Length: 340
Image (cartoon, rainbow, N blue to C red; front, side, top):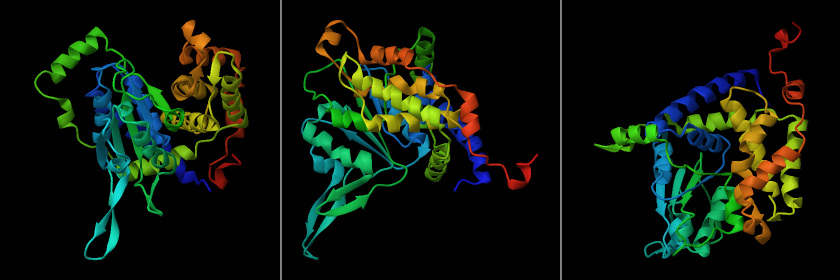
């Protein structure tokens, strides 16, 4: 049951998120919206896929976010010879006890960076499926829980296709959002030359939030209210992708869940106890587009998934925003204040 004291958690969400954002922006110049989306996914207990051309700071963004949090961090360099056991762990026979002992793999960390995830084989990529969805690893009939908080940030290069394996639909669907860093503006690139010219500012980063804080903030995000009209709006947006003639694969029910969770985190970052349709709209492209498969005709017409999602946003009616959200929001004031 939600208590009145949890209202203060929204203040903690905004202040802590601002600290983390300033810390990451000290390394990633001129990309506040990208950093904000990464924080949204973190607080929504999701996983992030960073997809862009080489040299724009994909891995740097993942490292900066990880170092800004006082969490255990592991980096996995995905290569064609990487094995599933390198990620999940392996059972090793102990000569003394005459039993197999489980040796945890790189996935047993609170923050896992998967660098160039599409360079590993689909068999190795599938080792992440259970971990990302159920936050556990099953090995030799035993289940091992992963630490909390737990987040996977993966990078991939969409341009260089030699020696890469496209992410299967099941793997892409596990990522809550996909983001592209993009090229910096000339002014941001000049600042980058000053900041990175002598030494990497990444080495000077210190944690500005503890793991326990992240757990408490995600609990506050889960308590953010979503009105019936807003929930229905999210469902209608996702359902429209399944019926769109330019898509041969629409978004899954997991996409609906991820969209609502991300919208709750966005509302909490804005200091609100309730979700607006604006939150859903702002996150529709990064949450939905990477899950969609356009038809061959749409690809020939150069209609990408992002363009189709924007078209759906214009077609699906928007519910009455703040009024109904506030009307349906639970009253968390103490009983003595409710009659005033």
